Length: 144
Image (cartoon, rainbow, N blue to C red; front, side, top):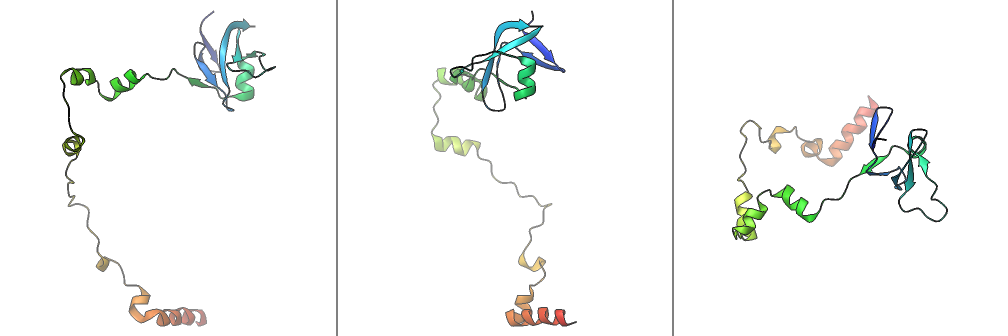
């Protein structure tokens, strides 16, 4: 049978390990029952090594999240800097301060955005009459 199983339009690559909502990892046993793949816990505690049908597993503990192989340090390096090997081979060395200066750009002022000052805001009632005057305005508002 195929190593791809389709359940309700979702393709499951049976070569991958899957994690359920509780964090338990499940892998395909290589067997099928009634055309449905059997899944077993990767690190099953004692007495919990009974395989489940993928359909039952999906309905009881789904959704199932595929766990892909972790990238190696070389994969990370290649993703971050595709010319890393060429850079090392050329013997290029840069001090951290020089690197920071090279990648830092000067801020560009944007004249379209107005710079607000305190004069743009209406004055506070506390600044106009003081705190006692402010309290009196509140008291007066309650009376009227």
